[in-house]
Image 1 (cartoon, one colour):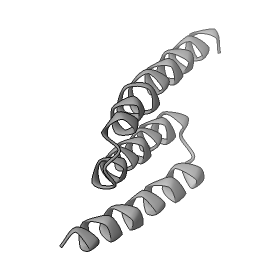
Image 2 (cartoon, one colour):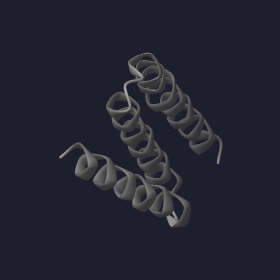
Image 3 (cartoon, helix red, strand yellow):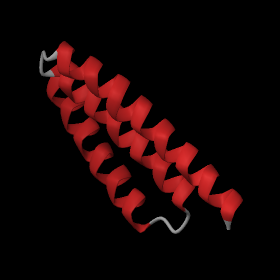
Length: 79
């Protein structure tokens, strides 16, 4: 059962990452980037690395994405 969760999550992360690369709108790419980070969190937790999962959740998916969205908003006002 765990193997199916790992395989499903891994395939989903790859599909989301590919979608983030080919997405035309930057805001949607950032949101998809957050999805890749959350998928990584699930994989890290399943592989028994909760400290890495927590760090990825806070910094990788949370703070980095927030900084990207704030920068995008700031650049949108200038343009």
